[in-house]
Amino acid sequence: MERFIKSWNTPRTRHIVYIVFMAIMLGWVIFRFAMIISENKMDVFNPSRGAAQNGIPVNTIVMQSQSGVLREPITVQNNRAYVSASRLDKLHRGSRVGNGEIVSISRDIDLNSGMHIVRTRGVSDGLQYAEYKTDGYFVPLYAIHNGTVMVAENNIATPRTVTVIHTDAENAMVDGLADGDIVILSKVDAGQSVKLVK
View 1 (tube, helix red, strand yellow):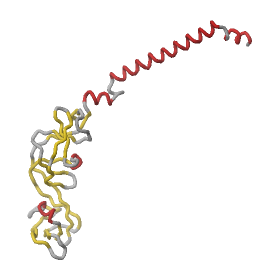
View 2 (view 1 turned 180 degrees about the vertical axis):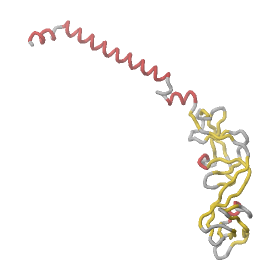
View 3 (view 1 turned 30 degrees about the vertical axis):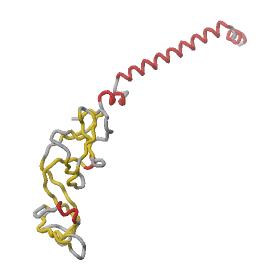
View 4 (view 1 turned 90 degrees about the vertical axis):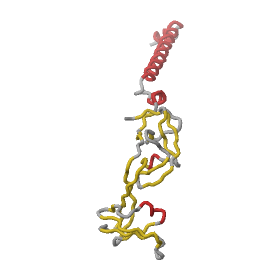
């Protein structure tokens, strides 16, 4: 044991240990740099770099003016429903409601309720949905933020101001879009590079 301690304290032994330690440290640094370089080349290990170079993958819809059906909720009791003036233009005589239809819409306000009376035929009591057909550009409500939607222009997310004309629980018919506009459904910030998901 004494011999080992004496040999350990020699300058030559300390010098060898120092060289081995430095070689191990240098090998570890080279290994780490090699791993970082290989990860940067592979988007699998570095998705943020890939998104910055190729664009963030986004879901989209291509706008085309079309006929669509929006659904307006109304509560029916004894084939009668009460609606506010702001909702009156979404309901039309002959519109389908459940298994029945709307037969008349009062333009006069009912003095007892302060609402307009909508009469139906063949409709069960409870919450129902009046369907109405309309033509235009339809986007999901979640794609509209503060009166704007994001469109892809040259693979860049660009805000576009739209006017909401009609809505239901899921979709909105809007003005301010044209045929061929690509509306981004995913959450992105203005100016971000995007990659369209087919």
